[in-house]
Length: 159
Image (cartoon, rainbow, N blue to C red; front, side, top):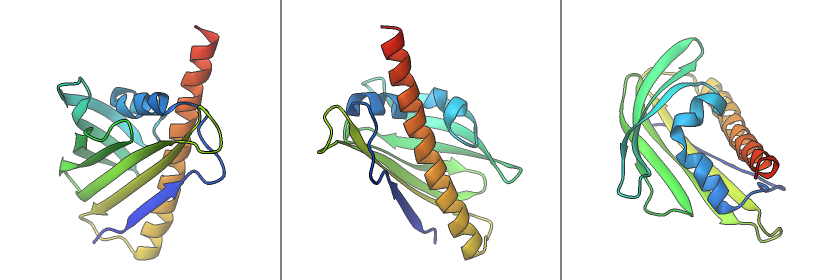
């Protein structure tokens, strides 16, 4: 069974509104430009609000390409965007979410919690998996924050 991993931005917040963070999370087509390891991302279905419903991904890790399709749940926006595996080649499970909350300490800032659970069909020793998960979680959250910050800076420079 895959272990669940959670990473929270401790001691800092994103210098952006909840809405700005949600916009980046929903912009799945842009993931290859900023999300570590994501080679391709294509929204294959949208919901009635024009939000992502299904998306097809190709990711590379340790020299191997992985293809998978995720089903998104947008019913709890703007507080949470979650996803689960619809189909995949070497993955057994993928579930995850971004949770967004206005910062209690700083106005117009957002606390972000990123959760991810991944289970592969091929066995991986526990200590290797835990190290890889820790790196993946930190990198994924850091890249997300960097992309939100980049877009906010760009929007301020080009009003």
